[in-house]
Length: 378
Image (tube, rainbow, N blue to C red; front, side, top):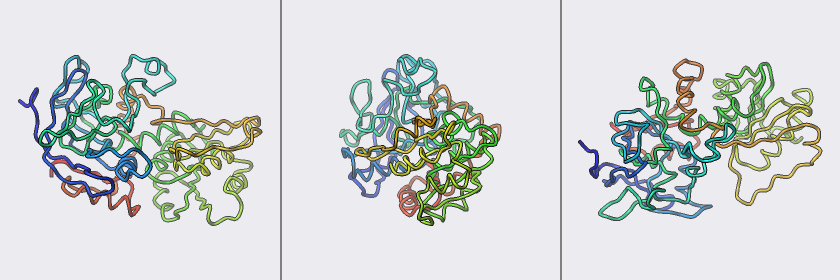
């Protein structure tokens, strides 16, 4: 009934940097060619939303509708969309998969030329316009998803169709942070059974990396974090030991090498702090050690290490979204949850109705919990 028409709905709009979001009635235009309009049922707050909402280190773009970790149901599809239909259950993704470009055609990459993340674009890629407006004035999109709205419009390549039996209030967290950490471990670090893994940073992504190491069969998973209050929670995700760099006078890479008879087999860095990145690389064992960088560094950061660390057969890798191709691979991650191989519930520590979305920002500012689910309907 709503297909082809403008929908009026509630959205949480950021009018300016760092100011609480404001509940507004927005108009959401119908999807154009290769676009879908999705009814969002559950969304959650990720650190990336907060970073761009604060707008301290990047081009501010307001008014804007944030949100990218979510689950919903397709309401209508634009011209040329064949793989999705109204009623399909979907996860929006901040990066895409066009399936046509060299990256999408490569088995080794998920960095789509057309749809890879672009934080500076606040409009649709097709016509350079926004699908959101208030009184005829455009409201900017965020990373192609803008899920802090009851309805949103996305490029079809940024929408993963999933098993309709999967509970959207749980699997919505798989559309960003959890998959990023999980994939960093299982797709990139690939720890052998019985191996030792160090995880730097025990936020949502780091805990997901620990969960990935647990699923892969690592026997020792060492969590490294400056906040010791995170250690108890991290045991639920497979961490067996902890190191707080503040407790040691020696560099943390030396502490880890002494704990593990020369270094860990794999490390996964989830902080974005360049010093942690260097430590994560230098703490892996020579001969076979692999370090994987996940965290996004400061734009002026430089990674410095002695070339001998490479010549002694240590490997340094980077990953983006856990090397998952959004449309091809995310449905399989949801199936891992459905088969009970991957536990998602333990990542979800809070839940608020949409009208109280600012509470989710407060919880994150205080560092409380892991993920807060925002319920759109009640």
